[in-house]
Image (cartoon, rainbow, N blue to C red; front, side):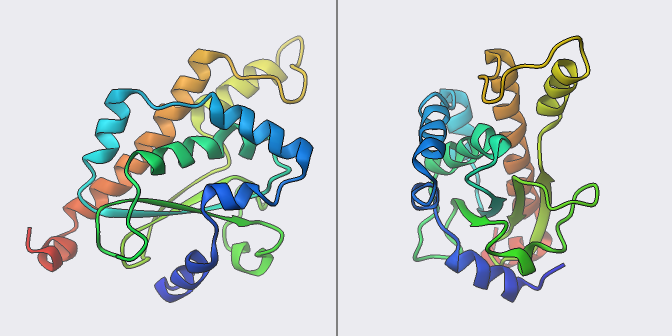
Length: 198
């Protein structure tokens, strides 16, 4: 696992969603835009994100070529948009999601293997001091269940096929739930409560 200083350094050079997908090839970018434009949080979900009392930093290991990244990373971007953390303050509340390319940051991402591989997307939640909170990758449980039903059943979908609406809603809820979990870890931390005098 990396030190808070190493996380801080990589996070500072990582890219926000819009700048990250600028590096995608034209055909890749169209898929990212399509999923991003069709991904929305409900009013209740936006209110939940805006209730976070601590800053949550999310470092996403990704690849613009990755179909799972295309389906899931726009969700994290939408969560960050619901309550963006100010760039000029490490302690102000909000969510800051940044992206790094798995292959470009190959040395940094080595410790984050899942099932023996460098899977993407992998999201790493960090507190305001860039201390590790949690990790989730490369798919949520609902995403795995849906894939298992499609791939282990009698037929498989075409690559890039849209997710069923109920599956997409559940995947959004799971990514949001992990963000909320990280926010609550920070909010209930005795050390951070003492630091913030709350």
